[in-house]
Image 1 (cartoon, one colour):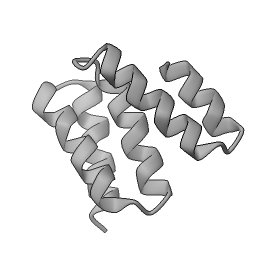
Image 2 (cartoon, helix red, strand yellow):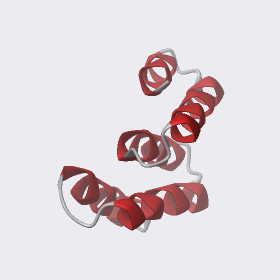
Image 3 (cartoon, one colour):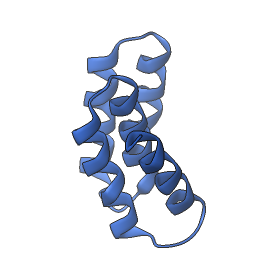
Image 4 (tube, one colour):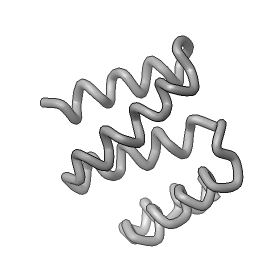
Amino acid sequence: HTNLGIAYEALKRWDKAIEAYKKAIQYSPATPPPYIRLGRLYNSLNRKDEALRVLKQVLGMVKEGPDAEEARRLLKEVEK
């Protein structure tokens, strides 16, 4: 479902991409990449509160590593 979300993003089908990322999270709630992609998409759509919520969930799952670094970077971007 994460890859499906990526495909929908490429087609600029934002609602479908959000739906696909949420499904990916539902099926695998401990996997950070769909949260990160969803947070990035929310931010690009100026849905800041939702982006913050989703990205903070990543940091609740992982404290270090590439996913945590990406979530922190995106959080800084959202909070600007």
